[in-house]
Image (tube, rainbow, N blue to C red; front, side, top):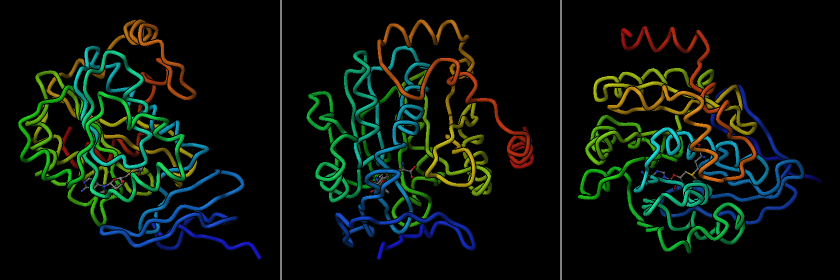
Length: 287
Ligand code: SAM
């Protein structure tokens, strides 16, 4: 009898997976961690009942949340990842030879340990990259206390429930801004806009009070169900998200990175948002 696992992110709607094999399940110090095998998506990691990443579609999310800000910035040397315990974001950031240092602040060592054991292709050796500096701690504390500065900050967190909730707060965004070098950019996973529209509104309201320029960009990630995933964007350099396609193409060619989802045309198009989202953001921020 095949067991079925149902995601519990939303009331009255959700996705389910046949769990061909439970590989790991435990209550860690911070959250419930489950890793199971599924015939269609490979190995799947869920935290507190919410799909975090799957072997089959992780590349879409990790490529878009890493390469869009780094290639838009054009000279990103120091990168901060908040969360990202599965290691996929670290892998994609480390593919940029121009990046000199990547600091990753992850609250749950168990996520890193179990991802290394059961999802090794996510990090694909990136945790051994000499440029990678792993900090086990709460991301909100790190950005509040660190004297380090970064060109790109990527919040690769869980949803705003449980330990991830603080990473959607005014305090986190204000201290992330404090940690950015001039011309830097903050990007965050901000949920599926159609299903979590209030989260996009709340993030826009907070970012618009702190940064000269804010927006969202998107990508369709199959196991983040309900529509396209929204990535929040915030910078005091309004030009960063308006780079001409030719410049992104030149930078992408120079980076010499083979991707499976990201390309310069997708980069540019990702900032075009559906009207219902634009209307909700304008209503929330007056812009
Ligand atoms: N791709 C996923 C998504 O979009 O929901 C995120 C994947 S990654 C596994 C999320 C990571 O955020 C987890 O490893 C979790 O432990 C970490 N995390 C949650 N709250 C955190 C916090 N306050 N500080 C640092 N890491 C946190």
